[in-house]
Length: 366
Image 1 (cartoon, rainbow, N blue to C red):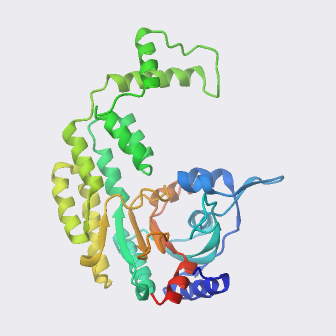
Image 2 (spheres, rainbow, N blue to C red):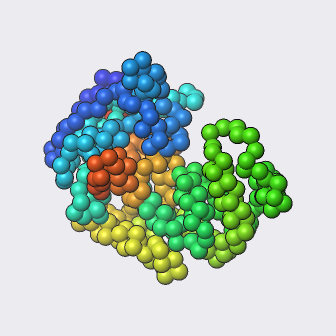
Image 3 (tube, rainbow, N blue to C red):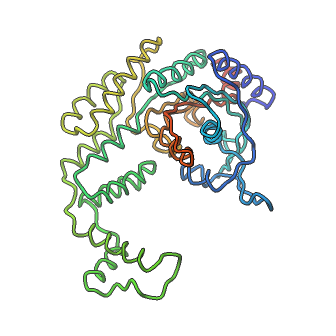
C-alpha cells in the first residue's frame, strides 16, 4: 500500500533532519521554473514527462521535475564553495500508465559542491544515503558514466562519430545501433543511403528551396559531414568488442575494478577514470561502506538524467515494480553549463530519496 501524503511528509522531514545534521544548509526552489533552460538539461525521458504551461509574463514555465537543476542555478548565482545543501518538497512528472509512479511525489535531497577531493565527496554522499536507508535492506548499485564517456572518446574514428555516440549515451538502443553502423555491422539506413548516393552523384543540392530553419551554409556543412562519414573506414572490430565489453561489465565492485584495470591496458583512454573509481572505493571503505557487497554496473544510470557525467548510484527495493528508492550521482558538466555567464564551474555530486516509498516500505516492516 502506498503511503499517504502525511506519512510521506513526516518521513521526508525526518530524512531532511538527517541531512541537516550532516552539515547541509536547507534551501527551497520555486515550484514553477522557467522551461527554456531546464528542458535542454533534463534527459529525454524527463523532458517528455514535464508539466509545461504558458505564463503571459514569464513565457513557458514548467512544474519542477526535480530539485538538482534549480539548486545548481541558485548556487552558481550566489553560492560560495564548498557548500552542502538539503531540500524537501514535491516534484511533478507525467506518467504514461497507472502504477506505483505517481505524477507528483516528494523528494528529499542532499548536494555537495566542493573542489578538493571528488572521490571523497562521492563517498560522503553515498555513505550518508546508505546509512539513513540501512534499515530497509535495499540493494545498492553504482556505476561511472565518466568511464563510459572516456571509452567512447578513445575510439580511433571521426570526432563526429564519437560526438554522436556520446550524444546518445543515455539512449542505449540508439547508441548501440549507431555503434553497429559505425563498426560496419549494420547497414546504413535507406534514407541516408539514398542521400549519400545523390551526394556522390552531385545531385544533392544545398541551394534547393529552403524548408525548415537551416541556412544554405548549414545544409552544405551537413552534406559535407555525411560524405566524410561515408568515406571513413569502419571502427575496428576489436575496438567495438572492447567497448561492448566495457558497457556490459557488471560485477561486485572489487571484481569490477580488477576487470576495468585489465581493460584499461587495451583502452588507455579509460585509465584515469578507472583510477578515480579505485580512489572512490577506498574512500567509501574508509567511511564504513562494505564495498565487497556493492554491485558495480558499468551502464548504470544510462536511462536517467543526462546531466550525470561521473559517479552514479541507486538504492532499490526487492519489488521490481518500484522505482528507485534513492538515486544520484556526479554532475560536474551541469555546473559549467549553468555557470557559463559568470565563467564559473565547480565539481558537484548529490542525490535524492523518495520519502513516500521509504514510508511505504517501513509500514510493511521492510
